[in-house]
Length: 284
Image (cartoon, rainbow, N blue to C red; front, side, top):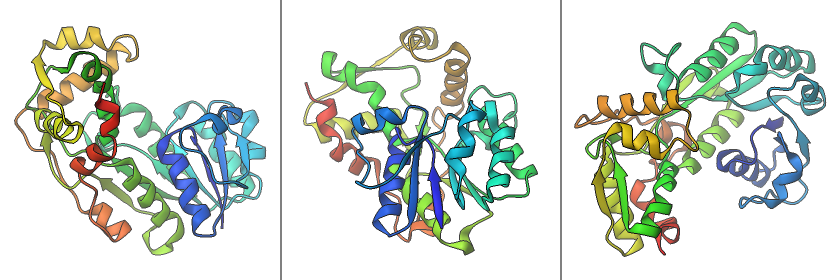
């Protein structure tokens, strides 16, 4: 099996490439800007070929897919129809999509967070290719958004401190992708990936404080103030969608599944463990 992994500038893609290479599988790393891969924190193993693949530019698909049997795909709907056509022409038999648990909401087609994932899922389901859907919820690494404020002010602004999520370690997602790419019995299904427990935002901040060895204060702010604070890097509709999501889970435990253990053979990593591993990021 020869696998193309897209989005290798990201933690999940780069980790998956390393796992495939470690286990002796032929793998090709793809990125919109392949020249930048060498500069990423997650360096790729020596000898792994790197190719340009911009999921919005069909001109890059042919070379990227040549000789490929399976693809780990990020959910970019802009060129999905052309990508699937190129994959069929190249003889690809299996695509693993990094989707999102947001597609499980009733309004997925119109939800600003879920819409792109939903569109790509529908295109894949309609294609003749074997498709495996990985639907992770909140990433543990989303806590990085608090790091600058914690380092500078020792505090975090939260619109809904009691809102729950079941944060998942990105390494678990990469290991789940490895499993479905290499175990035929796991392919052709959809998996809802979560961490092992539902935690409020306040509890997550408390775990970060314990791991970093410093107190972290929580400032409860309005939704409008929070939206303004993230406006430099988050489009308004996405911020609105996240606010609605947080409001819906305010005081409501998030769903926890066993799909990580089903796929990887080990329990999902805890947020506390992720906080310990990344504690330096939250220290001055």
